[in-house]
Image 1 (cartoon, rainbow, N blue to C red):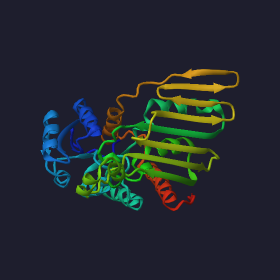
Image 2: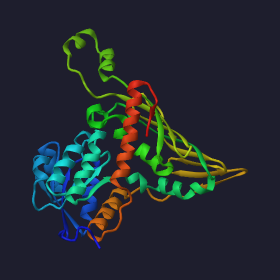
Image 3: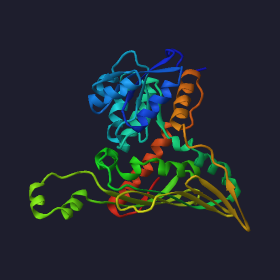
Image 4: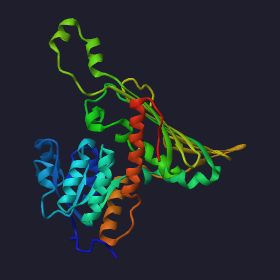
Length: 348
């Protein structure tokens, strides 16, 4: 029996955001007879109006107004990472169920408070982690017993972008520390291998202003005093020691000084290795190797949305808990502290 039997059908949904993830959420809701997208709040009213018109929803000037709408049952948050915590808190305080794209918040000390508030209000707080639903992760979990005890893992995602976009994903205040903003890079490994004991991390962000100064002549330099907070390249590496004994390396890089794309996960164990390179999977064992079939990478936001509705309306358990997401956030914050201090951080 569902915990939320008093909900209207179809659910009345408000959406914060008008970017890529928000668009996929809106498309998923369009195809869902159990929910209706009623209202949207975005960064600018012009963008919000265009987005809302495409999905036959009402454009709201600000998210603060959206979360107070009494008719709304559910708020979906798909906007810049910096604002997640504040919107989640306001939506829960207004009595709304909440779905938020990871991370729940950039401030790890706030995360437990938000979970406690959701519990106090008897409301759903779901932090999206579609990487757990993805073809590579599901295939890896299924194949993991074939290599016996895992010993070492390496997960690398590198994305060249030239020129680097002046978007919030390249703005440190809006995106957050690289492995907090890109929390799924750690969450995959923690879902596979469990609790982390130590974290060592190094990060390097380029200076867009220095690059621009190098490219300008002296007269242009004298005319330009405005500092651009966006960076052009991000490199971040972290080494994790798990309680299970697994050693893992995470590499996350994007921007102008990244020259070759890479999306690769490798797990080495006592009796073999699992190698996932792009959309190709391979099980390597003594004297043999065999391909691993991968399903489609598409439709994950729609699947996550359907699972949320299953949970709200039918009581079906969700695939991830907010506590699991917050634990990964704690590990990511340890990586931030390690990068800042140059020291290995020990986790209790």
